[in-house]
Image (tube, rainbow, N blue to C red):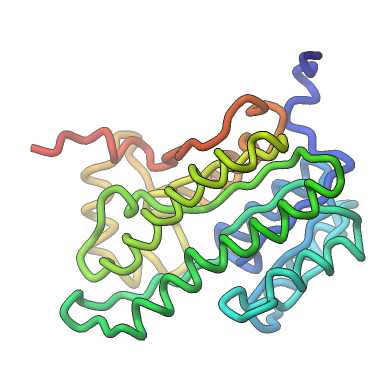
Length: 261
């Protein structure tokens, strides 16, 4: 097998990337990074917002190609429509990033069956049907391609009020491994990035006690940044990880390395 030169390892030139939940935060950072690496990018977002338009404008202003598509992946047919739109505009997608997710806070004893159903449909079923829509197109095109799911370290260590969210992210990790096993023979790699607490404009003001606990626990002494997650996604989407599939990669500054007692 030909070894890619170092300067080409992280290049996605000629590729087409679909990123769900892409209009802001981690999703926007991932989208910008994949576009910088040379991919034409399709931003999936729930509803219509100016945030996605701004991300598209920034990519186009830097010489890249991007469109946004409204897609609520909890709805039947939304994943297929998103991948079809990508195919029409740019060609068969080569990279899929499942970032769309819900993260409500609610105590375990207060959770209803509807709460569980909504969480799992968005965070697990939505990802699964999108992977299927992506994989069928890749197989028809001759195989190859990369899927990167965005999980959470809460899939390994849950937080209070997040039992349903943590369960969904643990399920997403197992979906990643199962899909990697079945899609590997087609040359499709499936991996997961598990971010820790990641900065957002409202985080420190809205949850100062959580930020304080994080800073006391994190080995590298800071919050994660959306770009930290985006760079891990780029690695797993690129030829730099060409023999990597079925893995869960924490991007948490070392929090999971903290002693449990």
